[in-house]
Image 1: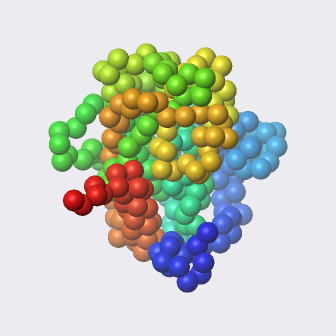
Image 2: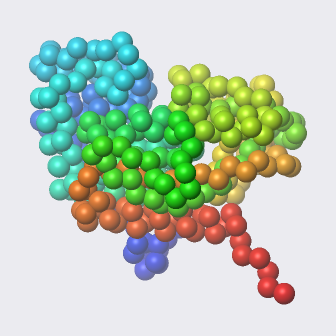
Length: 306
């Protein structure tokens, strides 16, 4: 644990965890945003520490007052969107920035990086495609998104960054994923993955190396559900071992496969154009790049000198 005088404490953006609350006029918008990001009223209620019925009442109020029409398509704003709500979301973003806070989200593999940051308004992690992450940032539901190259639809030429209108794509560094499996199946050749629509290049990379693939249902996002399904079916899981506590594998009776495929990912932070110039965003970028650099160094220790 970092002490107040440690370098980690000095470099981490300072904010007391959970000290920020949305302004009273924006509380119902906050509930709606978390509902959009969580994907269900049950998960939103759990994230907000409130009863599901409260989430439902707030949703009905927002629908009535802002004339929102839900969409059946799996778009960014499933509960409705219009210009008035868009302006309100951008105003809420400005308030967060005033308080030195960013609403940043990622998937379950990389959430531990965000959990260590004090300037983040946390929302439930979910696996999404790169385009979906970009849409959430562009529409103001997120201030930033931590995105892996494995969630892109197509591979990029070496040295090229993805591009989305109105967004800045800030490179953070690379990490290596590894496959772990239940201790009873140390040679598993089938891997449990998020839906292909969310992690197309991860599916492609493992299929190319001869692994069989199974998809976790979209509704099952809790880590316990992933571990149970992997253990029940003898499946491997992709993880970033450097982000896990040292005792994690032993506690869950899991172990790394003897033969590991090459799974190097590039990570980016997606920001609205202009936000990269703000003090809070610069702090977050500096901290994330430092953390990812340290993690990568642990994954690839220097070769011993002769």
